[in-house]
Image (cartoon, each protein chain N blue to C red):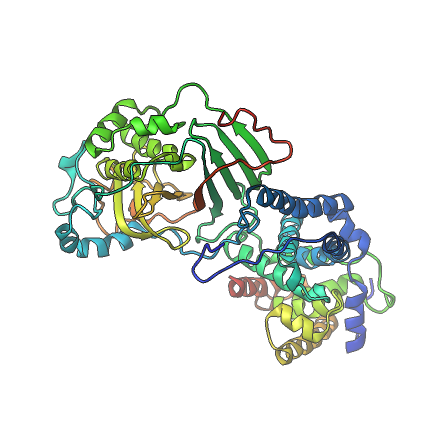
Length: 201
Length: 369
């Protein structure tokens, strides 16, 4: 059907095998996609975005690669970006920080006696949005640098630089003995959040 | 609560990794039930579309397009300026052009020079509609646009609406998207402008002045007779466009060009970028902050699109319709600077078909009998 100049649409009837494959992929991947999306928006919106993401995957099933997770993340990221640019401006970065704090495992890490959960989360909140995204794509979502770079829409080299900077800043934030609440405003989270928010709009 | 004095880089990253969300945390918000519902909805929508395709032979049904990015509803001023600039050229080919509104009540308020000839249908248009054994099949994509003109994912009204209308006015409606339903609407009582039959539409005059008189005498509802005429034209063609002849549809456009509060222009495009005649109704007194638009194919005069645009902060402008008294440039309350969310219903397909689809759970007996 030509509904726009120069565009045509494929027409493929899915087989039962394809349905089963899609359902299996959905069952395996949708929680991981949800975990990724939930870091960026509230729960209800995240559910909608996951639904949209897999609807696109179903419509383009023949194009979904075997290693589907990075592909799904890219689709989800684009959907999130569209919403945040135009419809979700009220969703502040502060809430995004709250989202990943809620998501973080409540269990203490293995080396809990060395680094506490609160310390780690506070340090993560100190990172820029891009740095935090880079770090969590690797540490939480388990993506390789190459796949994470695709999700971020940048080169592998640029991603590695970003990730390295994120790690360095993470350590620095962990070792900073000054409590966040006591830091002067120019170095506080709110200023960084505002700056990130402006960049993201 | 102890804090690390000097965590190493590996320690720090390992600490982050160790906080990876657990399955239980995710499942609390993305439950198995929710997953099942979502999966069923994704595949279910597709299955219904496949069934419709098989029933109708229409291979385009399944292809619920992903809306393309479009510019927001342009401000009136930005569109009016080139029209005014080329006014002399338009006037030279009067009879086949569309220009600004003329005639009607309140015309004395019209600033000099802002009026052009009313639209007159070109000669030679067909006076026939679908055949007595056919159905008018029409596919309309409904899209919610945000304030920046971008489609809203999962918009409240976002759906594909497919209608089959018999010459007798019975309608079978299949909706997919925000609704997944199949409904049959037999003609309710006698045919009328918002629920027409082929015979009813064929009985209407195709002379613009006569049709204008008829509509103004028969429409009801709305806050003004002008708006009621505009609404009636949209209602007559929204579903049953195929029951009307091209000649009648063109006459409707002619009526709109003579309706107070309506601005008609020929050099526009619809949401899909198709050339279109666009008719805007705006009355800041009764509909502050709103523009209702109808888009027509400039050759067949099929209704291509209906659009309602609005501003979440209604203008405080309280003057007459800008069609009659455009506010001065730079006025902060200028109603022409509307930019806000919009609802678009754009026709993606229209044709005459010989049979209805068979849709499970949708009884069609009696339709078209």
